[in-house]
Length: 149
Image 1 (tube, rainbow, N blue to C red):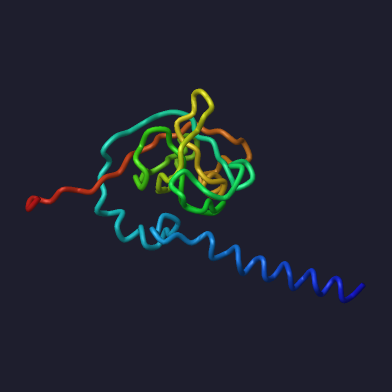
Image 2: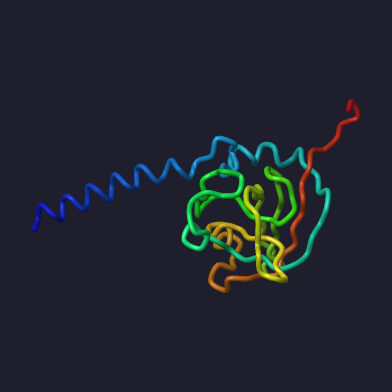
Protein backbone atom coordinates (compact mmCIF):
# COMPACT_ATOMS: atom_id res chain seq x y z
CA UNK A 1 0.00 0.00 0.00
CA UNK A 2 2.80 2.41 0.91
CA UNK A 3 4.57 1.66 -2.41
CA UNK A 4 1.41 2.56 -4.31
CA UNK A 5 1.13 5.88 -2.48
CA UNK A 6 4.78 6.69 -3.19
CA UNK A 7 4.34 5.79 -6.85
CA UNK A 8 1.31 8.07 -7.12
CA UNK A 9 3.21 10.93 -5.48
CA UNK A 10 6.12 10.54 -7.90
CA UNK A 11 3.75 10.33 -10.87
CA UNK A 12 1.93 13.51 -9.80
CA UNK A 13 5.22 15.35 -9.29
CA UNK A 14 6.40 14.34 -12.77
CA UNK A 15 3.09 15.40 -14.30
CA UNK A 16 3.46 18.81 -12.64
CA UNK A 17 6.98 19.22 -13.99
CA UNK A 18 5.74 18.39 -17.48
CA UNK A 19 2.64 20.63 -17.35
CA UNK A 20 4.21 23.80 -15.92
CA UNK A 21 6.51 24.46 -18.93
CA UNK A 22 3.57 23.91 -21.30
CA UNK A 23 2.07 27.16 -19.96
CA UNK A 24 5.07 29.06 -21.27
CA UNK A 25 4.77 30.48 -24.75
CA UNK A 26 7.47 31.03 -27.31
CA UNK A 27 5.72 34.23 -28.39
CA UNK A 28 5.68 35.61 -24.83
CA UNK A 29 1.89 35.75 -24.95
CA UNK A 30 1.69 34.45 -21.39
CA UNK A 31 4.58 36.42 -19.92
CA UNK A 32 3.45 39.48 -18.03
CA UNK A 33 6.95 40.66 -17.06
CA UNK A 34 8.23 40.81 -20.63
CA UNK A 35 5.13 42.70 -21.74
CA UNK A 36 5.26 45.24 -18.89
CA UNK A 37 8.33 46.84 -20.44
CA UNK A 38 6.55 47.19 -23.79
CA UNK A 39 3.20 48.38 -22.40
CA UNK A 40 4.30 52.01 -22.22
CA UNK A 41 4.95 51.93 -25.98
CA UNK A 42 1.34 51.03 -26.80
CA UNK A 43 -1.65 53.29 -27.38
CA UNK A 44 -5.38 52.61 -27.36
CA UNK A 45 -6.53 52.17 -30.97
CA UNK A 46 -10.14 51.11 -30.36
CA UNK A 47 -12.51 50.57 -27.42
CA UNK A 48 -15.24 47.94 -27.18
CA UNK A 49 -17.85 47.52 -24.45
CA UNK A 50 -19.66 44.31 -23.63
CA UNK A 51 -19.60 41.15 -21.56
CA UNK A 52 -16.61 38.93 -20.92
CA UNK A 53 -16.64 35.30 -19.88
CA UNK A 54 -13.86 32.86 -19.08
CA UNK A 55 -12.75 29.55 -20.45
CA UNK A 56 -10.22 26.91 -19.45
CA UNK A 57 -8.60 23.74 -20.71
CA UNK A 58 -11.65 21.80 -19.49
CA UNK A 59 -14.23 24.05 -21.19
CA UNK A 60 -12.13 24.48 -24.37
CA UNK A 61 -12.34 20.74 -25.16
CA UNK A 62 -8.57 20.48 -25.29
CA UNK A 63 -5.31 22.28 -24.86
CA UNK A 64 -4.79 23.96 -28.24
CA UNK A 65 -6.11 27.35 -29.28
CA UNK A 66 -7.04 28.51 -32.79
CA UNK A 67 -3.54 29.97 -33.15
CA UNK A 68 -1.99 26.60 -32.36
CA UNK A 69 -0.61 27.69 -28.99
CA UNK A 70 -1.22 25.61 -25.89
CA UNK A 71 -3.97 26.99 -23.70
CA UNK A 72 -2.77 27.67 -20.17
CA UNK A 73 -5.42 28.34 -17.53
CA UNK A 74 -3.19 30.95 -15.84
CA UNK A 75 -2.03 32.54 -19.11
CA UNK A 76 -2.51 36.14 -20.18
CA UNK A 77 -4.45 35.19 -23.31
CA UNK A 78 -7.99 35.53 -24.63
CA UNK A 79 -10.38 34.65 -27.43
CA UNK A 80 -12.02 37.26 -29.68
CA UNK A 81 -14.22 36.81 -32.74
CA UNK A 82 -12.52 39.25 -35.12
CA UNK A 83 -9.30 40.76 -33.78
CA UNK A 84 -6.13 39.42 -35.42
CA UNK A 85 -4.12 36.78 -33.59
CA UNK A 86 -1.38 38.36 -31.51
CA UNK A 87 -3.30 41.58 -30.84
CA UNK A 88 -2.73 42.98 -27.35
CA UNK A 89 -5.84 44.19 -25.52
CA UNK A 90 -6.45 45.65 -22.07
CA UNK A 91 -9.53 44.13 -20.43
CA UNK A 92 -11.04 46.31 -17.69
CA UNK A 93 -13.70 44.95 -15.33
CA UNK A 94 -16.17 47.84 -15.09
CA UNK A 95 -17.49 46.66 -11.71
CA UNK A 96 -14.19 46.91 -9.82
CA UNK A 97 -11.76 48.73 -12.14
CA UNK A 98 -9.24 45.88 -12.30
CA UNK A 99 -7.45 45.56 -15.61
CA UNK A 100 -5.13 43.15 -17.37
CA UNK A 101 -3.35 43.12 -20.72
CA UNK A 102 -3.86 39.89 -22.65
CA UNK A 103 -2.96 38.61 -26.10
CA UNK A 104 -5.60 37.32 -28.52
CA UNK A 105 -4.69 33.76 -29.50
CA UNK A 106 -8.08 32.07 -29.94
CA UNK A 107 -11.51 32.55 -31.51
CA UNK A 108 -14.74 33.04 -29.62
CA UNK A 109 -16.82 33.57 -27.58
CA UNK A 110 -19.69 31.87 -29.31
CA UNK A 111 -22.40 33.02 -26.90
CA UNK A 112 -24.57 35.93 -28.00
CA UNK A 113 -23.80 39.21 -26.25
CA UNK A 114 -20.23 38.36 -25.23
CA UNK A 115 -17.24 40.11 -26.80
CA UNK A 116 -14.25 38.33 -25.25
CA UNK A 117 -13.32 35.11 -23.46
CA UNK A 118 -10.34 35.32 -21.12
CA UNK A 119 -8.55 32.44 -19.41
CA UNK A 120 -9.86 31.45 -16.00
CA UNK A 121 -6.65 32.81 -14.47
CA UNK A 122 -7.31 36.23 -16.00
CA UNK A 123 -10.92 36.08 -14.81
CA UNK A 124 -9.68 35.40 -11.28
CA UNK A 125 -7.23 38.32 -11.44
CA UNK A 126 -9.98 40.57 -12.88
CA UNK A 127 -12.35 39.47 -10.10
CA UNK A 128 -15.19 37.78 -11.96
CA UNK A 129 -14.34 34.06 -12.10
CA UNK A 130 -16.98 33.11 -9.53
CA UNK A 131 -19.73 34.98 -11.42
CA UNK A 132 -18.59 33.70 -14.81
CA UNK A 133 -19.55 36.85 -16.74
CA UNK A 134 -18.73 40.53 -16.25
CA UNK A 135 -19.28 43.84 -18.01
CA UNK A 136 -15.93 44.93 -19.41
CA UNK A 137 -14.24 47.55 -21.53
CA UNK A 138 -11.76 46.13 -24.05
CA UNK A 139 -9.06 48.53 -25.24
CA UNK A 140 -7.33 47.36 -28.40
CA UNK A 141 -3.67 48.35 -28.11
CA UNK A 142 -1.26 49.24 -30.91
CA UNK A 143 2.22 50.65 -31.22
CA UNK A 144 2.72 54.35 -30.69
CA UNK A 145 4.00 56.02 -33.84
CA UNK A 146 7.02 58.22 -33.39
CA UNK A 147 7.74 61.35 -35.40
CA UNK A 148 10.45 59.47 -37.33
CA UNK A 149 7.87 56.99 -38.65
